[in-house]
Image (cartoon, rainbow, N blue to C red):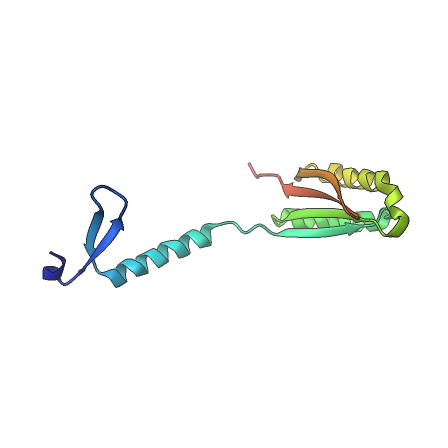
Length: 135
């Protein structure tokens, strides 16, 4: 039948019983599949993660400056990964780093939700914040 119409026989579902085939132009079929894949890719959401670095002894002015940057990132729809980096012997101030990150999370709680609580990974303590879904 496909030869009579000058078209191709395309196997749609080979594992079905009996196998499902379709009579169509193969080049047109490939074009439509590429087009569908491109549409799906365009509709997918790209997640951007911005990082903000603190030290365990970060002062109020620097903290507020970085807080404003984080607010802008979250309003743009990006996730924020804030971390306290401990250098040398400053690792003894783990509690100060955790307090700083928790303060950061509470200051941003109106516009962001905490995805990951503060966790120490080697010399850095990280926290992940994601924008709250819009209603």
